[in-house]
Image 1 (cartoon, rainbow, N blue to C red):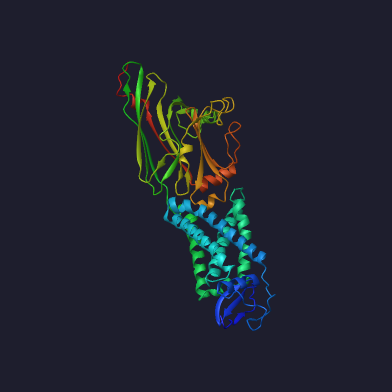
Image 2 (image 1 turned 90 degrees about the vertical axis):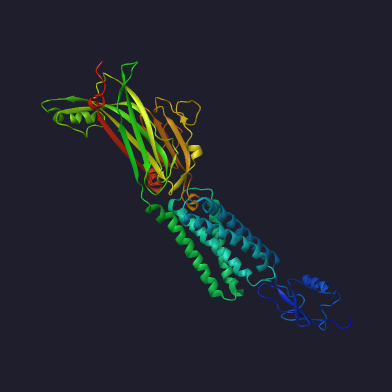
Length: 485
């Protein structure tokens, strides 16, 4: 070529990158003299003497002025990319369960926002290559800044929620280091004013603020307001039917009809339930003196009847005749669901009972407050089987069926900042049902170690309640249609 190119190498910018022009047209940028030679070779000028002022014009330094610190730039780029990728994975793991399977619309929106932030952070990780490279796109810096802002916001939220209980969770090993990384990355990007390439930076800042505000409001609505506004209502009935004489034995068959209906707006999980039929015996006095003398004795015996009194009847005692369960633990009762149970029990004709009573109780957990791993919880485990983790010697605790399963919060964001929580329940025909929701309760070592303060908090947090129904019938009324033997 007869005319040599007029090459101009501009002064290095803040990162040490020098712009290269040929004939007034920008042809590339270079971090070093080696990259400059590669650029000239690629354009067809391999024989340019870079030291010849007639061929190359150096501005802001000469051929030895290359202030780029490649190791520092590449290290920063790698750290920035790794942090964004890790944050994207964390946000995706948190948001996807709610986005795909949450019960309420607000919770799904919250999950979707976390998934969206994960996608933005993934795009920011890709933009790191350009922003810490030759910056061919003017939006790469803003995208990286947006990704870091989202990471800082979500990690700060996780950290604040963790500080509320300060319980160990494996996710601590992720969001605590990521919060420190996000703080470093945010300071670095703000110092470099990475948003300068955006045409309208104010609108960009407004969009970031609105997104953060919507995320906060959605989270607050789904975790605090919405689960608390829907009331719980149940209709329970327990009625005795018409007794019939057993033709083969001196017994009376008594039918019992139980019904349960969820009349509220929220579905619930049945934790434990029980129905028990009692026969009452009492001491009678025509003078009416028993109530004055013996009601305290009745209470002191532990029969639980000391709060009942009649003028002519006292020393009330109840014998358990029949016991069973209406539902299996873990059963989901949807809003409007109604179930009935027909049960028949037998008693001898000559029993000394003066009346029969049936008690029905159901302990439930609101589904909008949490979710139970039903596959594990619904499996009964006998306490008397040796070698089982649920074993307990009969001399220490009663023989019972035990149920144990994981319970999750209504928002996965809460789950990742808390220790695993478990729901436990026991049922035995010789005793009343027992239940607990706690992270510390365990069947090991007999009945397990229990933190009652923690149990109280968790029961309130998951909306655990018990509903009751009872009915009584006199033996005279029950046997009036049965002829005397």
